[in-house]
Image (cartoon, rainbow, N blue to C red):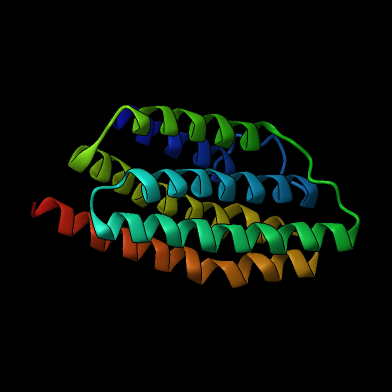
Length: 173
């Protein structure tokens, strides 16, 4: 379990850290945004169906709704700008980390599932915020892409706070 949380953190640290020989370009940023959102959509769908706590199920549903909305906006923007998202090591790492997280979560049930899902969501959203602040926004050269990232940031921060609140309530049980 801790290994999967570490894997998620490592995947996103690639975005925020010095793993890039150079700063990501807009096409790479677009691929990272789509991958990061899809990871949370997939985990959210699983939490909706498998969560035992009403809070976990509702949070999963919110992740699906919110992150699907961001992906729709991102796809519409890159289509408008005629930018093709460029697959890259960070996007691939996010995708494989998401698959690993789902495999881990699928083995769990009840309170163990809820705790593992929420613990992952806390770490994941912390890392996404770090990546948005330190890498994605500063390196987005297109003003509309930068604006989308800036517009999305408060929702990611709200997701983090909500996940932390659920995490605290699960610790009491």
